[in-house]
Every structure is written in C-alpha cells, then in structure tokens.
Length: 498
Image (tube, rainbow, N blue to C red; front, side, top):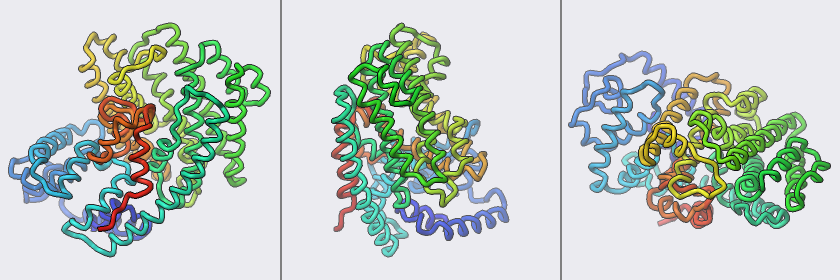
C-alpha cells in the first residue's frame, strides 16, 4: 500500500485521492504500531539498517533498496548520526554501480545523487517519472494514463497563466525602464510552479509570481545601480508607501515606485473581502526587505567585513525567503487549511523552519556567487566571511558552508515533525519553495541569473528544484537566460507519446 502511495505522488496524481491516501496511511500506521520494532531478517535494508545503524556488504546488491535507504535517510533530523552512516553507505554503493544500471533505475539513481527525492520539486519528478513508470515492475496502465491526462490539463493551464504573466511583465519592464534589472519572468514562473502546480493554486501562482518580480526589481536597484544616497531615498519612500513619496526619489525610479504601489492595490483586489488582511503581510515583508537591502548597501559602501554570525543574521533575512514565506500563502484559497490567519502569523514570525530555509538560500546563493565571481558592488559573502574569520582557503570554506546547508535541511525536517499539525499545510508549501532552491542552485550555479549554466544539467541529470538553482557554484536566478529552453520543454512538451 505504501508503494502505491509513493507511485501516485511521483506521478503527480495523489491530489485526486487525498482522503483515500490519508485513510490508507492511517491503517498502515496502526498496523506498524501492532508489530515489533525490529526484525530477525538482517538483510531487510528498508527496516533493519535504519533501526540498527549497521550495513553489511551483502546489502549493496539491492539497488532499489539502496536508493530507498539513501532517499529516506535524507529525512534525518539534527543529532541522528546513524543516518549519516546510512547516507554514506548508500551513496558509496550507488556510485559504484551507477555505470552498470539500466533505465529507469539509472536515471532515478542519477537524480537522487544530485538531489535526494525528499528535496526534489514534485513537478519536475513527475515530468520524468511519467516517462519511466511503464518500465517499473508494478506498472499500472490506468494510473499512467490518468497521470498523462492530468499533466496535460495542468500544463495547458500553466501556459495560459504564463501568457498572462508575460504580458503583465512586458508592460511593467518596458514602463519602468530599469535596464540594469534582470528580465526573468519565465524563470520566476518556473520557480512558482515548483511550489504549487495544481489547478486549484492558479490564483496563488499569479500573485506569487508578481510579488517575486517586484522584489527582484527592488533587489537589482539596490545591488546593481543605485548610489548609497539613492538607496536611502528608495527605502524612505518604500517605508512611507504613499504615492506622494515619489517626490523623494530620483527621476528614474518614479515609474517603478508608482507601478509598485498600483500592483499591490491590484493584488489586493484579487482577494476576497475576508482575505484582504493578508496584503498587510506582503507589504510589511516588502518594507522589511528594503531595510535589509539598505543595510547591505551601507556595508558594501563602507567595505565592512562583518563576522560570520553578524553576516548571517542580516543576509539570511535579505535572502528574501522570510518575506516570501507569507507571500506563498497570499493567493491560496483556504480549502485545505493552509492559508489561515494562524498560518500567516506563523510564517511572518520567521519560525525555525523559515529561518533554516533562509539560511539555506543564503548558503546556496553565496556559494554560487563565490564560484562565479561577484561584482565590485557586492558585499562580502558568507563564504568570504568564513575564510577571513577562520583563516582558511576557499575550498575549505565552501565545504563548511555546504555542511551548514545540510544542517539547515535537518532543522527543516525536525520542524515538520514537531510543529503544530494545524500549520502543516502551510509549512508544506513553504518547504516546496525551499526545494526549488536546490534546483536553481544545483552544484553551485545560479539558474535565475545565468540559466545557460544549468540547462544541460536540468535535461541530463534531471535534478530537483532547490539544488538546480545553484548547480556548479552558479546562481540560476541571476543568470537565467539559458533556463528558457529548459522551461519551454517542461511547459510545452514534457510528455512524449511512443
């Protein structure tokens, strides 16, 4: 039964069977509680190795078991050192047999070694698993046909949304005339679809993409163009949040500021009367982000080298993740309990799950910028602060930051287990945003800024969302032009008939 649930999830059709799946898992949980904790079969890789923390060489011949162990062990929480051993054991044996595997196991192992399944965006996994499923031992033709039909229907909706968003962005980008700003609406929408792809989240996707785009324009103004004096003026205007404040700004920011306010008013009009309170969270987050960007601009102007801890206190918040967490919920209709008033309060308070995600975003982004090189305006990164503070080289610092990124994931896992169950629907959406970081930054690249660097990896390695963004040390958000071909493949022709 558990394998059936896994299949439905990977095919992307589990949302059609939520009640049945919940009942099934509840029954499995009751049955497990009635069983003994252990087993006399020491070769049961799925159970015994996790309970006993020891792994025999004979287990290495079970490829599917190794892959399951590897993926499951990445649900580790802080302090579960036995699962470090499980990951190392499984990774070693999977790599040793990787060149000998046949399809589809070869592709599934390759993807997992890049991004473990629990951290992979589901929509990207579905794209690939639909093509692989018919070769699985437990293949079910009806399930596959349903998955293909569902994928095509959702894809057609995504295309309509992307068309509308492209028209909106074209008007915005051409009106504000900020030539230094990244033109990345397709990449932004791709990121959004990794958070929620289902039909019922259409409004949420539109709203999130627009707010993300508006944040990107502000980020590029602070980072790439404005003088320190102009940064202070921009922040002052944003804190006032009133059209009369446009007089504070340099002329080249007038249209941007008016467009910013007008778009927030229009987004509020998209909400029901009982939902309009939500916009206060988006506005507050935008204002906060402006404050953080200003502090970074000041540090950059002063050539200030903060301690690692001081840097992370600011740069985790300026990553944008804490401000985007409530925005993830902004357009969600409250059918499944995700977008409650309590959930907005939780997300905006930057709980441990959001803080860990923000740190992960910062570590992946800074690793990418360190590997690709940063502009003269950029302040020191966490990698550089670690090097200066510890007196170590770049390679050692990158490894240390990678270990901290792994620790952040474990904190996220712990929070999902220990948090109030009523907040889980909201937390799942926030974690989906986190997963997209893995895709955008997979291997240290920046798939938003320079997507050409990750196009082949998206196609060949088929990695998941959060690690693809930083693949190879580059930032896929900042350099995203090369992502367009990959995204077009996913949106336009992801499922091929024989």
